[in-house]
Image (cartoon, rainbow over all chains, first blue to last red; front, side, top):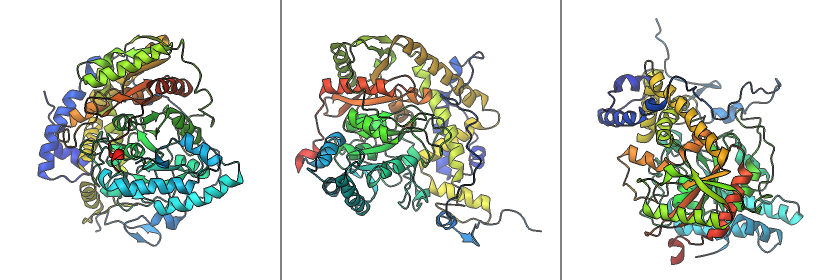
Length: 96
Length: 488
């Protein structure tokens, strides 16, 4: 059976604006895809450990040395809006 | 239509060294081909012809001086998810339409240092999500073998460019088959090395536990030559393996007699087109003729790999793509506060497939569903790896079709994501398990479209994989060319 999804909730979590038409289509398509994907539950038993990376690596460290970062102007060149060498964004908090 | 841009890099390197030709002439041949065909194929998003001519001129003097690396002067194309300093890198997405990276990805940096010449950035499915190239925000790529069919995806532009002589070789990326499937559908060689063998520094991330840089070439020897330049440890990528840079061409001509080749029995079922099955079976017979011991292998969890992949990859994507928030780069759509700005930006900047996967991944990772979906998928991943470990106890390499079908018509699967995802059913397991795999063209179907045979080897067994692929390629002698090239 297709899986029922609260599309509005998931879209809010993903910070994704969707039209009503997109929501309807995604509700239907994701339901079908998840029905197929739920097959993983048929074989994934309690005694099987999960794998996050096929070739696991841990504690990959580099020497703690100062190295130059990218030039600030090069990085800021891609920003939609810049002010005083910083990324400028719309209001992020209510002001009393 | 035939010329310098249709030769292998191996042949071109020899002729460059013998001073018979110049890099500038090869570049001119590629640019002429792009001029003649790319309006119809649409392999390139950002051509860099002028840069290529400059680089060729400088590398020509380097070659004349002697001691230049083998790949010096060979023009290439890069999939548009690989960062290139000063050259627009869009990921096939409106959200990065104007993004100009401030640094080079490591594979291009290594190629550039060795005299690589950049022809341009190639079209691809948006953020490498797709199997047909129809998900590019800038329009689809057309397969040089038949302009009405897809080139495969997501690295469709790179595959089409190499197939049509618009580049001698190219790099792409393979997260679930995005190098091997388009290489198969376009009749070229596609290599996805072991996870972590090629640095991903500067590769714009899709699914970090699966993403791999891969190569498109006209021969297995070219793939080995290109791999030799770009593989090996990079301190800029914490997931890159502690492998030295080495020459992968040295063992190519070792005989394959006595090697054990396992035919994956799950990969010849009902969903596989008869023409694909027949062509790959003939390739397997050739391996037996070469003296390989051919037997039947089983990867019993193959059916579950697709399900696991379509939970793991979107989950990782939903997390990786959180960075496109309209703050530091790319598109911004204004809003009354930052959350509204981000939400609108993402709604306007992402296309349908990216939205589908971000939603799927966000759902699979959300409170209450994590264990049932992502957690279970990770367990299936363990089972897939165990399947391979068992199979490789009995065999040195495994063989299967690369994709169940040859290239399908543009639009045919566009409204059916599940049918589209099935295209990658045989390529996904090597991503989940990290194993190296290669596709080589093994024939044409009754519509005249190329079929690819896939070989898979254990982790870091690239020399063995390339050795078998090279022998098989020599035996098949595939020399068909896209009909498009016969016209002019």
